[in-house]
Image 1 (tube, rainbow, N blue to C red):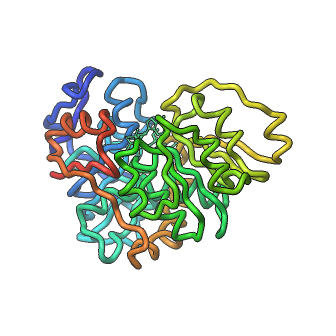
Image 2: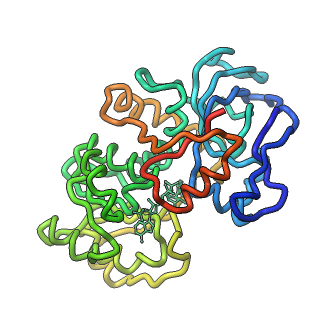
Amino acid sequence: MHAITIPKPGGPEALVWAAVPDPEPGPGEVVVEVRASAVNRADLLQRQGQYPPPPGAPAYPGLECAGVVAALGPGVTGWAVGDEVCALLAGGGYAERVAVPAGQLLPVPAGVDPVDAAALPEVACTVFSNVVQLARLAEGETLLVHGGGSGIGTFAIQLGVALGATVVVTARATKHERLRELGAAHAIDYREQDFVEEVRRVTDGRGADVILDIMGAAYLPRNVAALATGGRLVVIGMQGGRKGELDLGMLLAKRASVHATALRSRPVAEKAEIVRGVREQVWPLVESGKIRPVVHARAKMADAADAHRLVESSDHLGKVLLVR
Ligand SMILES: NC(=O)c1ccc[n+]([C@@H]2O[C@H](COP(=O)([O-])OP(=O)(O)OC[C@H]3O[C@@H](n4cnc5c(N)ncnc54)[C@H](OP(=O)(O)O)[C@@H]3O)[C@@H](O)[C@H]2O)c1
């Protein structure tokens, strides 16, 4: 088969479409014939040599895919060759075929295009595990989503709204209109406005109950300042650095909490648990049309370098797909 390889880490040109050995399904695994994958921010770091695949994961980038079940390994039940699926991967999505633990497969939701389904697994699992399972966002609460126009952000807006929360986002101004269409009640231009002031203004001084953060250190003090009493800050990205100052006095006075999580390195059993939760609680929202994949562009998988340039520019809104 062919896959995107990274013979030498570097810029987008480091991505090379090359012939590689076919994957074999191990016990409990399924081989998926890939129709499409999607670019995640983490793939850019992997390409630069800064985010190596976890042990046992395929060497090629790609944290999610959609396609058709092509082969079953020993012990797999509940799936059959020919099933239309999408999957959460530890790597290897930028390829014609990928082996994946069966617990990380999801059916293509009814009503979703089988290629666009590649836009869902990583964002659904990340947002669900953090905003629902960890931060326990409740109806009537306020969710602040940093980077509302990201793949993660566009999904978080829709899930927050579906759960009955008021969603506030930060994003560059050109993305605000589309983010309001997706359900954001307020959009903050982080380049011109102070998000702490804005969040306080739109919540009558209360602050945000849950913050989904991708900026890390750069936003840590202001995120804690923007939290409501009992608020939960969940950091999933470090685009603004990894070491910041945490005002424990403010956290204590607010009885608030700070969490940080990564999905890719979790054990297979934990990923299966998250995927099960997504199938039970999120897929019905997708099938009813309350949540839709937000696809900015489709590129040919062999032209992954162009797709990486686009995502690096952040000019996209939602997901950029890589199609065979
Ligand atoms: N921990 C995990 O398990 C996990 C899983 C998946 C993703 N992530 C993280 O989640 C983040 C989003 O991933 P993605 O693939 O969806 O990324 P993406 O589509 O490439 O989006 C990145 C976003 O960052 C925004 N941004 C840049 N500077 C900002 C700032 N100062 N304030 C607010 N937003 C800013 C950009 O928005 P503008 O155009 O508006 O500037 C852009 O929409 C990444 O940091 C990624 O590493 C973590």
